[in-house]
Length: 316
Image (cartoon, rainbow, N blue to C red; front, top):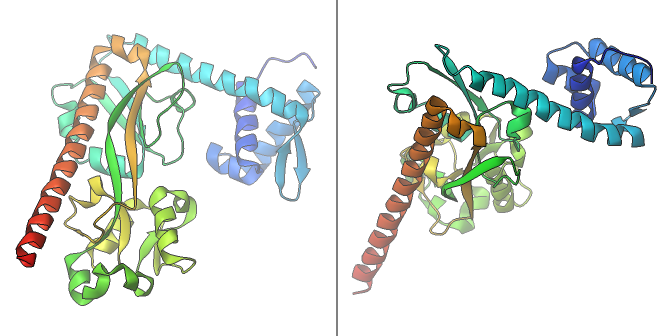
């Protein structure tokens, strides 16, 4: 290995190329040009005297040496992120405190409608929302709070369950008036559907819709959750949505039983407990989610009770 002043930027580029297996995709993530990314990798390999990647037609694949070094690079990334956040949290006396929250698009859609309830009385707090439906790592993303549908296993994080989620088929009242047979699952292959494309095609609701369509494609596909909701609200199509969102959008639920169930989790760094203002933000965010999940469950219970009562009256 040549004597070098170690370049953290080169490690960031190394991580991005390894995770994306492509110079061009890594360049997009890093907001750099593709030639610049290529030069970083070539210079790092020269300085380390180690070939990090095999250049193939299918993309950049880590060599054996690259796979061993990537573990250390990820550890460095977590350490660097922890250092940056530790510096932020040391500035308790500063006029502006930054609280970074990473969560899915639906979570951002919900919380940004209630920002006043999060920040009321906390004039020195700035909230930054990062919408990311991919699996998140608080250390790597330099965030303080994460909301997601999987329980994190990282030992350095505190984890709290927020509530239960159900996925159902929904459509607007207008769509149901135009196509009254939409309530019959046997007609669903012939109905008009809206779903996801692009990176969001891997989301749970998209997988459930694929199981309904059995290889057929939906008429409308978007890579943005709010846009999907807009199509349904306008009466153009049916779709699969999480109940805690759809039940407040004026949509009609067309499934008696959920297509799938899930959970919502919050995680945060232990050190957040020692920062009063950011800890208060965390508590308020958790309260908002728990309140919404509770309201959704109560609404579903009332609907089911009314349905059973209606069925009893019909039989009599």
